[in-house]
Length: 180
Image (cartoon, rainbow, N blue to C red; front, side, top):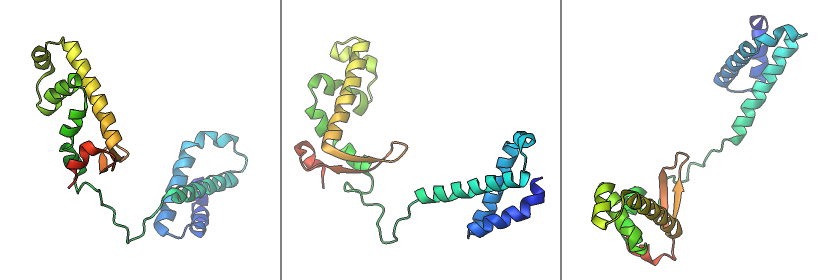
């Protein structure tokens, strides 16, 4: 059935899409949609009109997706974080000053756990806490450290949550020493 109208549908697509490769891709998408919806075929009165309707929708979806894309001018420099080329390593030097801003009850367990790599059981023994108490303080310390980072830094993350740039805010005296 599709093969009967394939040539006409491809011509229909080529009139609306200038790039030959895109036109071929759209033709394949039409074929896939027809295959997915072939169970509704007995209800279709005019197969030709049905195929053209599917093709029109595929072409429309193609242009709608293209409309969302934005291209950057060639002269824009893409990598310019204010803390250097590797913002994670640059910000690592700022953890100490920010930890000093936290209350000692949260800063010390967090320092031992995350910076020195000491197991939480050992931290609990050293600080005279229960294991759950040590875990709780480490978690609260992480939350407070995150709040301090967000207060003192403008962090830019990608869709996966990875740090791509960071800038120390001008009002944060604790981190002024971290800047170059």
